[in-house]
Image 1 (cartoon, helix red, strand yellow):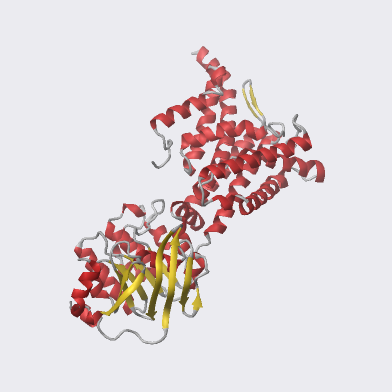
Image 2: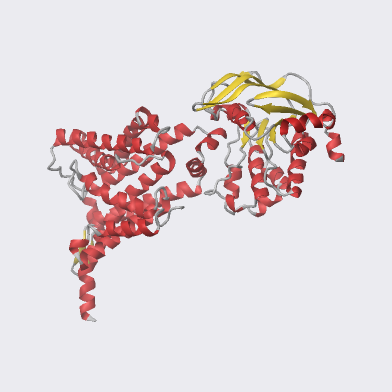
Length: 294
Length: 246
C-alpha cells in the first residue's frame, strides 16, 4: 500500500505535466478542427502561427513594454489579422481545387514564417518571464510543486476550449458555422455571406493558435521551432479525434496529454511515440477517428 | 379536386416579378441551359415540367446563382441579378428549397428552421409556421435528419417561409413521398399561394403539378419548349405525354 502511494506521488507531476501539454494539444487541434470543418483546408501553418503568437507577445514586451495580460488579447488579434490576410490573398484561391494544394500552400507558409523568425531572432530562443502574480496560484502537494503559471494555463485553456465549443454548438453564429460545414452553397443561398464567414473562421482558428502561443511563451523558450515541436503531435491528435470534430478535438487533446504523462512514468522512452501508436490503431480500426462521422 | 378547381381562377396579372431571358449556364465544361425564357407574375404558381436532365433543377440553381458561369438576364422585381453572388440574390427576395431538401444533420429541427436569416418583413411568424406544421414543434429538439422524409420536406419549405422572401423556388417537393404526404404538400402550396407567395416549382409529376399551379412550362434540352395554362392541361395531355415520356 505504501509502495503504491509512493508510486502515485512520483507519478503525479508527470501526469499533471501531461495534462498541461494536453491543454495545448486541445487548443491547437480545436483551431485545426474549426478551420478544416469550414474551409476543408488542413492548416499546416498552424504550428508557425502558434510560434508567431509567442513571438508577438515577446516583441510587445521587449520592444513596446506591453505586458502579458494585454498580450494575451493583442497577440491573437494581430496574428488572427495576419491569418485573415493570408486567407484572402492566398488560401481562398485554392478552395475550388484539390485539398492537397491548400495543405502544400500552408506548409510553405509555415516554412516562410519559421525562416523569417529564425533569420531575425536566431534559433536559440528568447526568454519570456511570466508575470509575478502567478505565484499566488502555486500548488504544493507534499513533495510536489506545481508553479502557479501552469495552473493558470490549465484554467485558461480549458475555459477557452469550452467557450469555443459553446459558441459553435449553442449560438446562432455557431449554427451558421455548422450548417456551412455541411453545405456551404445552400447556406449562401439563404443569404449568408459564406466567403466572409470562411475568412473570419480562418482568422479565429489562427487566433486560437496564437493564444496558445502566448500561453506557452513563459513555459517554453520562445523559439522559431516551438510550434513545429507541437504540431506533429497535434496532427496525430486531430486524426485520432476525427477531422473536423469540435468536441472530439478538445477531449482527445486532453486525453492524449494525460496518456503521454502516464507513459512518461512507466516507460519514459515511449512517451513521445505512444500518441502515434494510438493514431495507427485508430486509423486501422476507426478511420474516421474516435469522434468523427464516418 | 374541388380545391384544385378554385385554383383555375385567372392568374395574377401585372408586370413580371421574375423575368428570365436567354439564360445560359454551365457546370465547368458542361453547358446545361441553352437560352431559358421564363416570366412569373406576382402571386402565380408556375411549374417547370420535363424529363430527368432537361435542365429544370439547373434553372432553379442558375436563378439562385449556384451554377458555374451564367449568361443572359435574370431580372427580379426589376433588379438584374445575373452577376450577383447567391447570398445577395437571396437578400433580394428569392428563397430556394433544393431537391435533396438540404436539412442539416448537425442542427436540430429548430436550428434548421431558424437558420435562414430574415431578409424582409412579411414572412410567416414562428406561430404561423407551427400552426401550419405542428410536427415541427413536437420534434423541435430532434436532429434535423432524424425526421421522416415528409417532415424534412415540410421543414425545408417552412424555413424559407419565415424569411420574407417573396419568390420561392421549390425543387420537386413531392419526390419520394407517400401519396398522402404529397397531398399535404399540395395543400400547403395552395395555402402559401393564398398568402401571396409566388412559387416556381420544379416537377416531374404533372398530376401533382396540376393541383397547385396556374401555368406550366415544359423544359427540354435546357430551354422552354412549350407553355400550358393549367385549365388547358387536360386538353393537352397527349402533347404532355410526348414531352414527358410518361
